[in-house]
Image 1 (cartoon, rainbow, N blue to C red):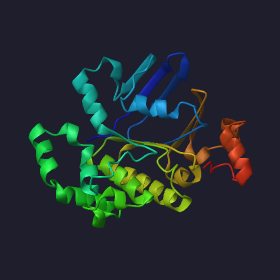
Image 2: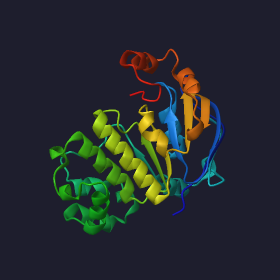
Image 3: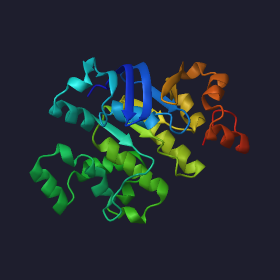
Image 4: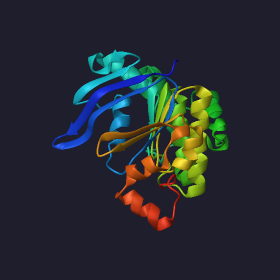
Length: 265
């Protein structure tokens, strides 16, 4: 399936009295790899969920492949949601189930009822699941309980769950925030490599920018719900990045740890 393109025209999103996004206008071409950055509470997760079809904009227009998403039928929206996968900071796995069962779990809603019943009784799609796990270096754990895995291995299972559905777009919402630096770097490289190999649209929300930047096409920055940074990755200005995080908790954290302005985690 072809990767989707997205267009936001003056998109806003509120939750009661709280404004999460304000008049955001951007275009994301099909297959582009985007780093999404900004202080906590900037609206990054809201933007990701709008693009994935989990949320609807309060104001403005949101288009995927040139079609207004708010005008879609329930079936069209379900199809879009099924083709877009979010990799969360928390892996959201079922610890009592096996790696195999967790991998196919994100695809169950797309299967007919009889295939879902079959999957509950015995392992199905074994070779396909193994191929995905093998690409992530965890094929030997296919039938182990998730509870026996390390944090980094669990996050790889979460990635496998996303990839198993052959997504058109992947939205990684700070997927390495709870991992140690070495594991975070490895998981980041896996997500980027898989996105490039599959030609999908990828938005990677992270504060570990130095690990993502060499593989990205573009950097988008949000602050207080507003778009304040939009730059080709190769032309990213350290000054623009500094202004994005100025006076934020992340900026204080950077000063404390003596980071160089591209590592914010």
